[in-house]
Amino acid sequence: MMDPTFSRPKRSLSQNFLVDPNIQKKIVAALSASPTEVVVEVGPGRGALTYHLVGVVSKLVLIELDHDLAAMWSEKYRDREDVTVLQGDVLTIPFWESVGDPSRTHVVGNIPYNITSPIIFRLLERPRPQSILLTVQNEVAQRITAPVGSKEYGALSVGVRSIASAEKLFRIGRGAFNPKPGVDSAVIRIVPVRPEPLSIEEELRLRTLVRSAFQWRRKQLKRILRDHEALKIPPELLEDVASRAGIDLADRPERLSPEAFLRLASTLP
Image (cartoon, rainbow, N blue to C red):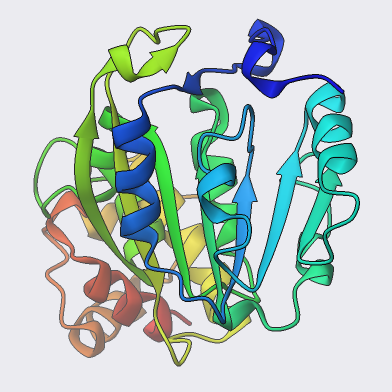
């Protein structure tokens, strides 16, 4: 059986394996999963976190895109009922089918930097897990947690924080990985809000609003709401919408908090 320690990183899959044992333990400790809980690990790779989780939580679900690594994990844990290995793309496979109750499940992973945002929003689709702990590019962590009004604050910040809390826990230097990436990393914790603040229909409306607003981030909200092709709010309704949402139409998108975007989305006709 192949030893994952000697698995060569595949550039085509953007693999950067976490090799610092102290950081591995720090991430698992931050996950705070109890022995009665389920953990889904996205991209176990060589097992940097896996070896610290097997037998410690009630069930571990591994999602691995790499065929060779997935086959290795399936063989290694074929006799363990508490480990499930899924080979496939986390963006498309129905992984929640392997979990009894997603709302009582933790997600952890060191995810490819080139598709970080799609993976985050995939994990935030309903049904949502109890918590999500991800190692991401430090710049992405800064964007997600950016203060309102800052240069980094944008669609990603609002998209995540309108339905979840987000906290940057600690930074990881590039030397903790093999091969060494060209950027520093950070561990971020995302905890979905419960009960859900919006209906599914309202969430779709919010997504359209946020995407449209930050496409025109240098323009005032009045013009965005009135003129953006995806919105087209009748001019005679703008003042009423703004009043009910408690916003200033002269503001630009980066001045609106996630909560303000929530109010605005719920008042749009």
